[in-house]
Length: 190
Image 1 (spheres, rainbow, N blue to C red):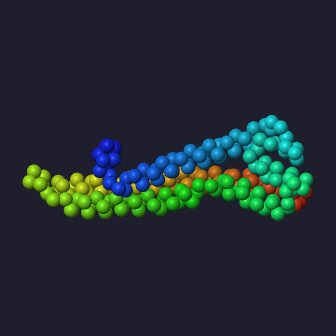
Image 2 (cartoon, rainbow, N blue to C red; image 1 turned 45 degrees about the vertical axis):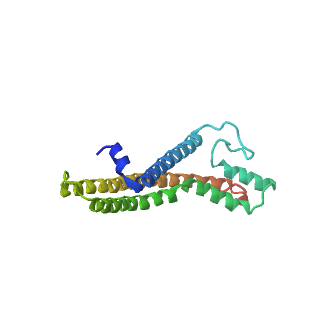
């Protein structure tokens, strides 16, 4: 069974499975670039200090910018918890979408199997084809969508775990940054 056969005979379930695989790939690339960028920027020497003397090249310095805004009166103190929450949420972006793919892809694969079996049993046998051969072709076609659904779900699960690990590292950096930049504590916490 090759890709052309699968595309031609995959049925209505193949396109949603393809969309899920592309969404997983896009999320994996976006999160890898984001976590790599924050890591590279975090390790880079400061190009220019920000208003509070801290490097402005560090992504978490959005918190330092918010802290400086609160200290100067440009932002209300109530903006601080929101700035910290936004910085934490950025690291977790995409995890729910990956959870969705992990749950839905196997279900779509099984749906494709059921539809393929129904189509296999429902086709009238011609005189040239044996009923067993036609049934086996239908079953093989049907199981291909299950395999595809399980492969997509497994790949999405691996990507999800990698993104969750990256999010945990990101949260650690954000918390350390929030503690050092806390405008309500004068930025003196360590």
